[in-house]
Length: 178
Image (spheres, rainbow, N blue to C red):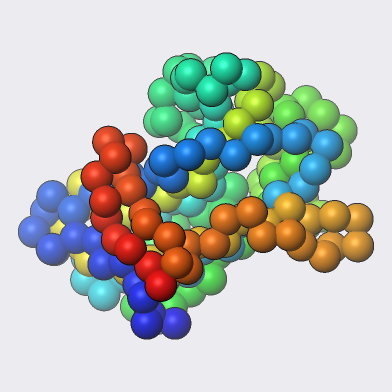
């Protein structure tokens, strides 16, 4: 790991960064999705979040876990407020259904305890936050993979950062992979 990693932060106290994938992916609540993200932190103490931002049916606004039209309080099911160690660490989370459905009311940490998206989510964008809340730190993100998991647990890759350009929510290019 680390051959094509994205380095975020200068360890100067203004190192927090929210990174949201620039294009939406259709969300089917009857499917299960798996997100895998690999990260390490070489300096600092900021926390790490990873999951999906929800988007409304017209893909014109965010839907937070509280129902607001903001990426704040996104659906952090792969990592939520974790302290990233100095060694490469793989974070995995699962999501299916919408809140209140019987098949998804877990924390997302395992396939048997998947997280549920807020009702009204029709689209999602993979996202992560490093060095939260603008704390001094240097965090590296090596890869992000989003897969659709079928009944046999075989997966179809929907998004893989290898060979792609990563942009923040404002459209600024952060890194090119591959």
